[in-house]
Length: 326
Image 1: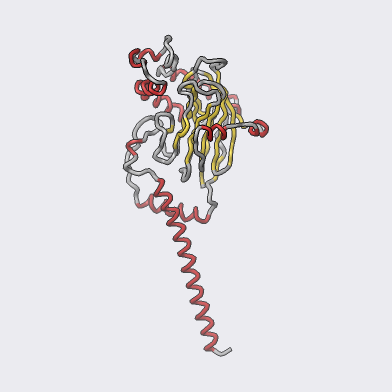
Image 2 (image 1 turned 60 degrees about the vertical axis):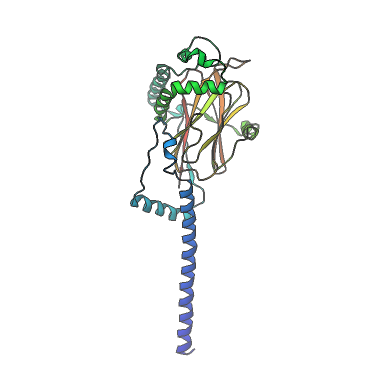
């Protein structure tokens, strides 16, 4: 082969290499732009922020993204393109039954303080729907007349939203679950949580936290988000994309109740804490003051099922937490 031919081959190889690198760079850049666009689309907007609240009830303030934060976000986007599509679910929180004797003593002391806190804040709902002696006597009697159960609960939250937020912020500090257990495969086989969600028109999504129980009591699901917000019956949609789309038994209508919080897409990374509050004991049929429940946590198609119980008069329970990470 002559020198001219060798030079021609080298030239063609060089041009081909340059074109390959440019095409590959273009593909990577498009992927990065898609990732950035998804993040921007579902990020909290400044205009929306004043309508959302932290777990303690304070408004989430507008913030400015610095150049360093933008660069860090860009670097995370680069690494996410090369990594798996779905975030990694880190191990859920430890449960009280897993603690050492010393740790258990400390937990019990905190648990007693939480129970005393809910009593001190006068948050036990004894007579919201039927006249009796209880803390809700502070709500004017005439305001209870001719109101639906939902209107009555709205009246209650107008009086007690601030102490409820204070109590929730106290609960959020806990890192240990209250004693739920992972359900056996045979129990899960016959569980109908998803059927109940579909019955009530609930959604499914990337991240989904569901609560089910089998009596007429009113349990409430509280979810502490990575953003600092708390999703619950008085703050059903968060700025970070989560939504409480099923909220049952404000009035004792079902003994096959369910509640559901879901991120249809773009669930934020970080720690999620799942709380359950025994809001109202409805004295109906065989409904008792001890309520067994099941919790289902779904993350990117992976399902974890738990069971536990809560007693009326207890503080809100921190049942478990989990973390989404890259």
